[in-house]
Image (cartoon, rainbow, N blue to C red):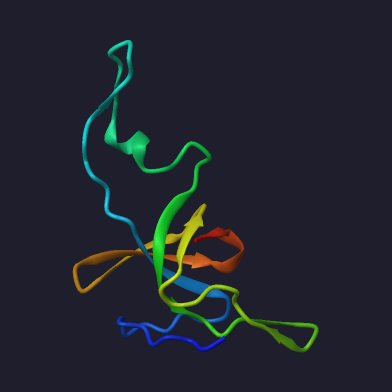
Length: 106
């Protein structure tokens, strides 16, 4: 699998992945009963996962002396459950352990 070059000058270490979280539409949502759902409650989908684009990938981590590569590539859209928020050149990203990536969106 050929790796694409990242547009960000950050190289995650080990099995970490740098993800640009999808932009929120910032629209106020309201239920049929008229209850307003605050923006903070709209960050995640119904299953608690966030969605974003992979912009940089670490080499993987060693287990029992063998390098286990990360299974996502730059450009993949992924669902992830948790990451460390970073701001790089004014843009927000999440630094996510590969184990917190739930799926690749096809």
